[in-house]
Length: 314
Ligand code: NAP
Ligand code: 8YV
Image (cartoon, rainbow, N blue to C red; front, side):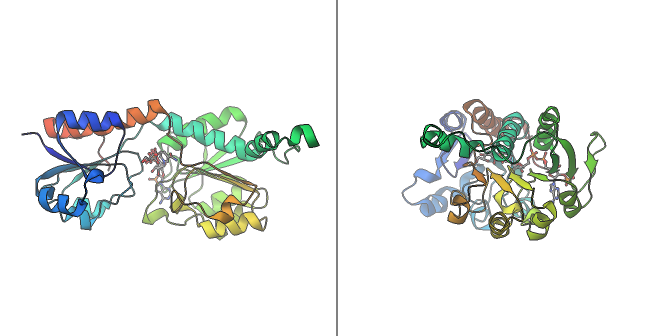
């Protein structure tokens, strides 16, 4: 009998097809009555595939008593209550490594767009203002020589650092633990890092430990030439404090790919010209998303055929 796998929300067609070929796939998002589906089949479910849209928490887990594995599409798995899965002996997997280059490329693009005002310059052209009013303004800031502080020098953070070096950026970082394999200056406190740099690149995971750690004090420490780039998770930044800091000149600009309440973005942020706003596209190329999807499938297959996951989270 094929293992019963519950898919919580629509995933890539390649993932759905591969799961259908190997498993008895329950599509929660297509169910007329999802609660009834869980009531009737929840007892059979041994695997969950999720893209993070819906939480995997006690309320769901209580309905899946035989669950063995949660395969998460995405490296950040903050939608999964890992205390609850651990308590039940459920393995959680994510999709690390295969997206590092894509996300780091996007982070660098966001940094360049923000410092050199490339989005605003493009809007200037499209509005016909180049022809009507003349060239877009000279940007007050340039990339070369900026001091980049990376909050979260992990897999993606390191790829960002490697890309930033040839742009002439001085690099420092803050993690909970100092790395012994990098030449970059380590700051044991985030506030100290913010005071030492003018550009803060956020690449830490979401969750309780990082919730709003980039707050008004950190933004003030960054200073009036300060730039915040967030490619990690929206919950890391106190959005109200960020909006205020951008409005009153506490910092100069921000480039964001992630938000606290996606896909909703506060109108105040949308109205700020010095904010470059991307709709969570860090890993969003066909090739990278396909590789992430394949890893979801590989984790499920490996678990049910060999009893071990390919990329379990710690
Ligand atoms: P990773 O390799 O686990 O790196 C995370 C880094 O953050 C580690 O260096 C870790 O170091 C540090 N860290 C974790 N908790 C911290 C805390 N409380 N305070 C300070 N530093 C902390 O993860 P990754 O693969 O690079 O991915 C990072 C995150 O990027 C993901 O979790 C996800 O949220 C986000 N992401 C976003 C996109 C996008 O599309 N925008 C795509 C992929 C990933 P220590 O353990 O030493 O603290
Ligand atoms: C995905 C991400 O867009 O991997 C992550 O943590 O944020 C992105 O790659 C997202 O997880 C897809 O649901």
